[in-house]
Amino acid sequence: MQLSDFDFHLPEDLIATRPVRPRSASRMLVAQGGDQILDSQVFNLPQFLRRGDRLVLNDTKVIPARLSGLRHRDGDAGRTAAKIEVTLLGPTLSGNWSALLKPLKKIRDGEVIAFEAGLTAQVLGRKDGQVELAFNKTGAEFDAALAAVGDMPLPPYIATRRAADDQDKQDYQTVFAKKTGAVAAPTASLHFDADLLAQLAQMGVEFSYVTLHVGAGTFLPVKVEDVTTHKMHAEWGLVSAEAAAQINATKAAGGRVIAVGTTALRLIETAARNSGRVAPFEGETDIFIYPGFHFNAADGLMTNFHLPKSTLMMLVSAFMGQARIRQIYDHAIANGYRFFSYGDSSLLLR
Image 1: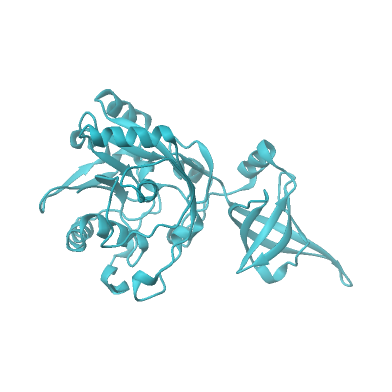
Image 2: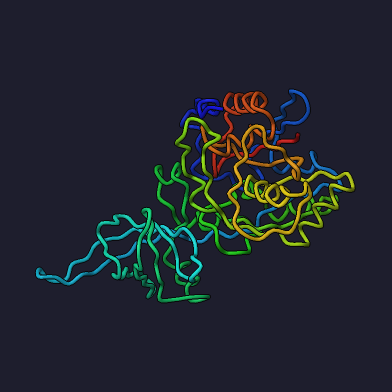
């Protein structure tokens, strides 16, 4: 299975740099049995679901993980300063943070980076291009300072086209975000607003919330030609006993389990790998889903349109079949669907 099997030509003007407003007004491609493809919009989702179906939603909350600060140093020529760009990657087991620094060569271990709002971070050490940072604030004080000085960590394909701004702090967060820890959004869920969730609940669609803290590794390119040798990054996830029981009960009753986003799908499939039923799960998952994978939990997937040659293209190809996904993506491109994090949606029903 070759990397080129998951390549396609994507016109640059189809890459979305801002979301549609309101959230549920995004277009939605619906692919179900046979060769059928329907063009719809997210606010029509109730038309394609039925009482007893269950949506699995990722309630992770994105932190404003991009920071700009100064490193001060005293020397023979006097006091100098260097601008340091910081991208937080996630908390460490010791309570500090792993991060990327740019330029890394401008700072030494033990030195301190000063940000606004009284926030500082000391560089404790470095490994494999990452550093460990110890901040001077913790808990609610740290969260407040980060909210004041940090920017949302927009994906590279947006960040190279424009800088993050205050609007992204709202746009790049789901309406049900609850558990802080992600440095990338579960973007399929960005299409949901309170009205749509209420409509779905009223018609008898049920919800389960799981948590997968999406890491920066989600944007790492696949660098091997034989995709089966690719090593996935690990991300922390939680499927509670309650959520596992709800999902299993829905399947037993004949309802469909529809993962909202590849993050929710990867997590529930991780939790179902051992027995074929979703079990409570807490810990890191590095599950890699590519064609040939056996799905135990998800009957449907709601997801945005993904990068060529990405692990997410491999995941949707595994879910729907490679030929079917080629057909779906050809249709999306021909019909001007908007791609990636701020783009349009698809509802894939197996």
